Image (cartoon, rainbow, N blue to C red):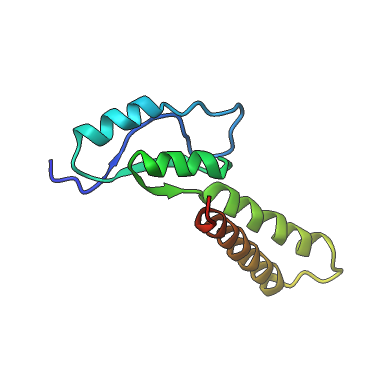
Length: 115
């Protein structure tokens, strides 16, 4: 097909989890053996570092932990909107941006730490 990566369903979803995700590691192993392209994780926010590391060890090369970063932005913006007597959009936007930066930094740092 000419695809350069494969995003298959193996237990993660986009959005907040309503229940603990069950990762199908056997399917990841089978996909890794069967396709010559990197595997992509659908969603992935809220998984623990050990789960991410196990998925990476089994061939996942791209994950999308967007939901928690977006939630951090929303919470930070709400904090700015709910407090002052005068709403200043630039302050809310700046707080949201800082929150995303902190969330993504924490995610990357956690994965980069030695086991």
